[in-house]
Length: 360
Image (cartoon, rainbow, N blue to C red; front, side, top):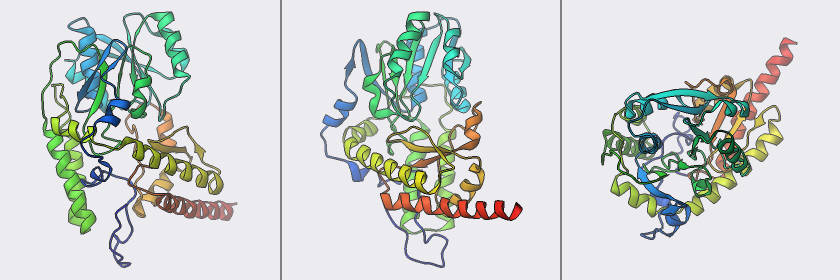
């Protein structure tokens, strides 16, 4: 992880943990021109579906639904309650507003799914082998179309057992590639969007900020990050840019996954030991998620110390997001960075305990 200059009087003297990748973060894990790892994790064909590459996960899902439904009447799409509502708006725009959304909150809701419906089955922060039995049961009962969402478990997509599957690699590193498995029929795509250009500018701005921290550069990369997200709201379905595909195919997924697993285990162990009030949710290599009734206080203190938890699904219908903290554990960081995260939270915990004792 890159460190800021040792300037104690500067608010930038501490390294950041979290936030957008810089333009150099990805390149540290490139392994040359070999595509062996990419082909292993994302084979060209799985059963009777073909690998297709898109710019984002929503582009991938839109392509799957477009191919599946064609120009039929509105599609009823079932999504998890913590699915980002803004993403669903983008999806609806790409499908010409021919989507009707339903939400599943528990396995009991699966019984309401009809044979012409589409279920977007979410692998929540990990791949759960038990999902195969659940998917088999849904298919047997309703014969609905099942699309598996591996955005939170991107390296496990080859294990899908539904009809179609998708992931996104842009949260794994700074590569704008989403993998989708479908029949590879005719579909509308475009080659490049304004999003990709803005995203790369944001990465370069963060790189400049890390090399020479300043308020101006910090605001620049944050502003570009917001603008790149806004640029995703387009009607076209965007295919992955060839240069992004090349970067994805040269990436060392194995080393990155191993570092993530190590950081997850380290952070989980420290939280369990020092912050037993927190509930650690299941995970493996994407994020470490915890539930705490003091979420907002912890998050404010973490932000003040330049530790930036992920803000997941802030516009979703899920009550759980109000108590959820989600930490970056990715390959940019080490176990010492995880220790720093815990130190900040332990300090907050001590302050909360003192406040409670004084009130009693």
